[in-house]
Length: 131
Image 1 (cartoon, one colour):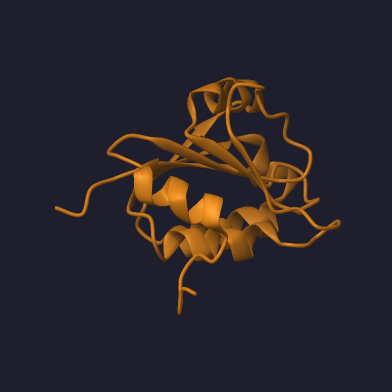
Image 2 (cartoon, one colour):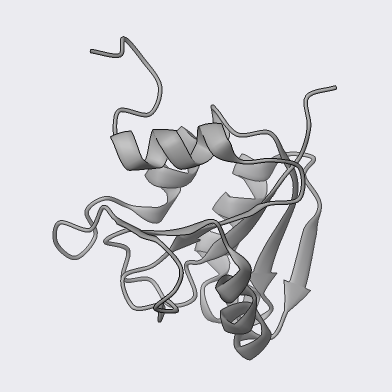
């Protein structure tokens, strides 16, 4: 058994397989997931697990060079957006329309579905390199 880090095997595997520029989506419970994109479904019930908890766990293991969020997040869920901005630290955020965001998910390595029910609680993490 792993002593720390991501305990979910599919999630741990996808993070370990990511290369520079690969996309990983962390999604709320309602984001549509393209059929061809692998789904890592962590949702247990509304709110469990929370979007920010999953984000924090992934950020401990994944080098992120950029994040992408829907511009609607700032207006519709400002508290969540502020918390997201805080957790990302110096990682730049690109803002796109929600429709563009959904289209971008088709190019992701995987979509991690949380139990989050806050509107627009979604982020695309763009993998960086550690050197």
